[in-house]
Image (cartoon, rainbow, N blue to C red; front, side, top):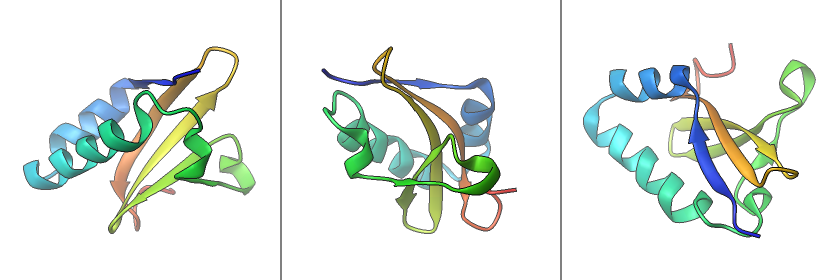
Length: 88
């Protein structure tokens, strides 16, 4: 089964506010690694605590927080940002 990627409105707004080069780098990572992948957990790490329903993907100093829905075969990008700010 191939996973599809969706974005929340908050994630889209965060990408628009980022530097264009960094946003392009983040989007290329998502396209290469997550779109149409068989197992998105290979590239990320499960979060703990109050974010335990999300997975994080490391892209340099930036992070992509996503929810993986196996029953619908969808990865929903929830937040995108610098590692200092994204976990707040």
